[in-house]
Length: 216
Ligand SMILES: C[S@@+](CC[C@H](N)C(=O)[O-])C[C@H]1O[C@@H](n2cnc3c(N)ncnc32)[C@H](O)[C@@H]1O
Image (cartoon, rainbow, N blue to C red; front, side):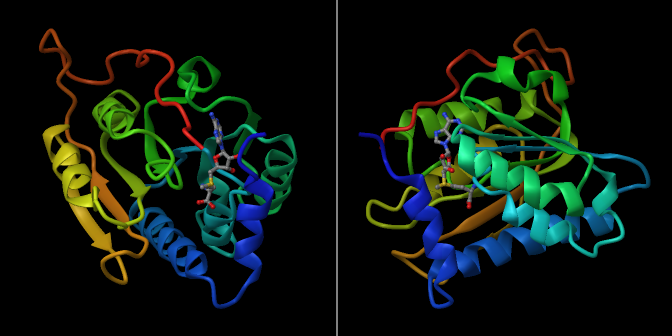
């Protein structure tokens, strides 16, 4: 039997659970990104979005919520339905795809984006897949886009390596927040100008499938 993601999401119902602080951190970064975005659509992609309450919470009551446009991808049907409900009223330009986020063919035509959420992924895939996913970021996001990611900091703490990987992918770190070692962390970076394998700039085409494999 696969991992119970419904049960995992139930932790958000516990006011003392650290996941709430993590989600609040993500929502604050999304709000800051919307505050700073030029007028017009804010193209957004959230992979493994769960119930999308990080995005919906940020968009609720925000004057740019209606400018969010793009895709939230979630594999579990019930969670995807909840995400649809949360986004319908707060960010009606967002569409929920119930499908495999590791398959860019499910969402790549929405890229490049201005805001990319990779939240709740890096703790569930191999270190090699983390590296490959970070390396793919410039092919998914426009220059200047904000990419938000999360990872627990249990030993061995992979976050220093992840932060270096974003730099190696041409991104500039904009922030990193964590209550401390062993706890959650959220990092966010500004995507640099993409340089493809042949020296061209701009997004370079979809990354190879699967982008990652969940190992729990
Ligand atoms: C750790 S939770 C994170 C959810 C949300 N991003 C958050 O931070 O609250 C991981 C989510 O990924 C979903 N998931 C697992 N494998 C997936 C896949 N291949 N494609 C899309 N979603 C997937 C799970 O159903 C679950 O909702």
